[in-house]
Length: 270
Image 1 (cartoon, helix red, strand yellow):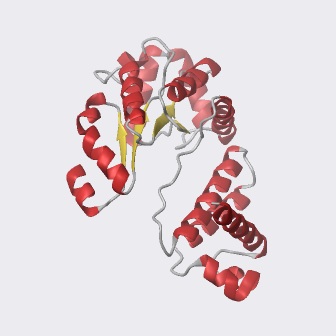
Image 2: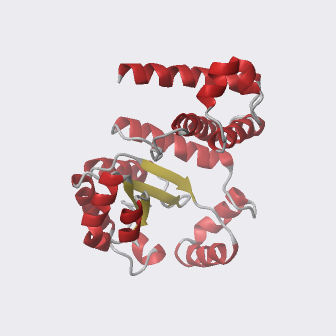
């Protein structure tokens, strides 16, 4: 499959737990040189004793994943940690949050992508069985945290995300994964939508108004899927042209205008 992606010039994101991915290091490196490749490592814990045996039995060790991450980084391939799911009251303590981020940075990772545990269907039933067996004292806290829903209380998940962001800043790596953007006619659209998606994420983890969060998310989708060059629309009709785009109102059109000016200045500097 990787050989086909290389042949077609197709970008690749690989989410891994196994260091066996290193067997394909050469072809991944060639894909990255031709278009783009990134290896994302699934790591949720670097502190709690017994974590692997209880939640990831028979999976490769955390140390082996970080060692493989370092080799991927040394090969010039973007890499980082999928810090998810962060298990409430098990993996979300300050010591573990910092340990995972610190080890990512030491292993050549350039970002950490964090997310809380979601609960649904058979996965939720299986998880609660494990919780009841090894952490029975936490079951009541989980009932209060999830209230029978899919996601934990937004205040809890937002607090964890903010903590991860602060630790990432401390170790000088990103708390979101850089987006692959194909050069060409719609490159600016993709860069604008990336910024809007990042704004949406920041608002969400800061528990801002759901209405404002959804307004930004819908605006990001609109620009991302736009079939015209947003720069050309702005050059031709200014803010009025931006306001005519679906889900873009007056305030968001000014945000997009500001982003367009910054992108223009960055291109001049480069």
